[in-house]
Image (cartoon, rainbow, N blue to C red):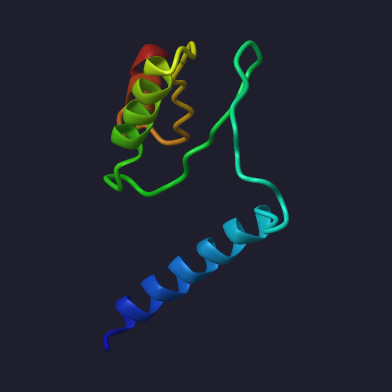
Length: 89
């Protein structure tokens, strides 16, 4: 195996382990309640299908009578640094 594959596996395992620590196995499965805010957070790498999954889930809950809202909270935007730089001048 090459070094890149080992690093990828280490990073994948570390992220997975830390996310699993956030979830308590004793907690009951999520059952959203109508009339109150219900928040679901999706985390993943670019291209892993988060947007598609979120859209399908929102559509599913809309069909069940829930009001849905999708909020993007990206921390990385490719052209933002360049845009801000040129707006300064």
